[in-house]
Length: 154
Image 1 (cartoon, rainbow, N blue to C red):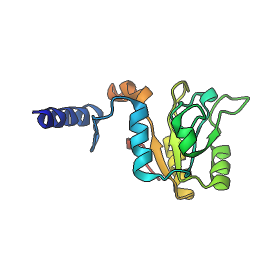
Image 2: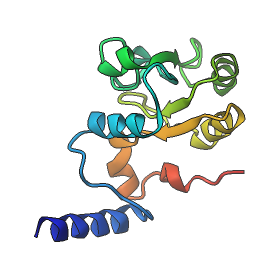
Image 3: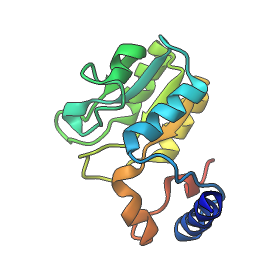
Image 4: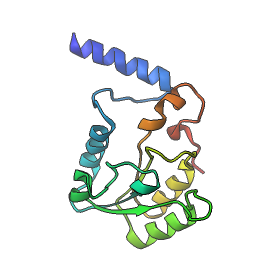
């Protein structure tokens, strides 16, 4: 019975988000992020993510999180004048650091993230791109904003 309920939830989430795949098991975004990190990274691998103080999330490698103790985290932030992500600066950091994974997503960044730009940067440095969309999932489901996984890749 549990497997049938889980499959029903998967089908409903796929329909809701117009997605090809869904995992309904994690009970928090932190656990979901840890599952992805554990699947593709090794302890000590480097990640590049948004600074917590600039809107990022604790589970994206902050020193106060287990992710900051397991992985070598570097953080990008917003431009001091525009308060927007500076994708050229992020690209420069990625070229220098050569992270194994770039994490896109935030808990309190109030603007749309250019996932296509981050995908391009990740491809350039042969990094995985993880999009943590926990905080925007409702907006995606309501089709108020475009789903990060539907962003066209050029």
